[in-house]
Length: 65
Image (cartoon, rainbow, N blue to C red; front, side, top):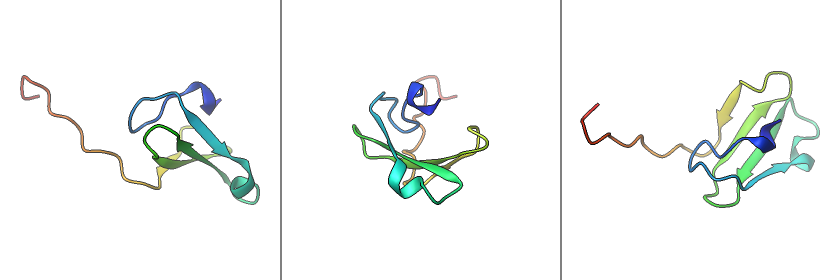
């Protein structure tokens, strides 16, 4: 289940699922209490994730890769 996952934006484990807004949709709405990132997860396929707020840019590794 998604509550065992971490935030895709900051990695925190402070996730909150919004059951009310998700009730009449095909997705679960999630929010990270630490960074405020919002995303959805399909109710039928947990690998189908859509980000409502943008993800932060990927950090460049020190070795340039």
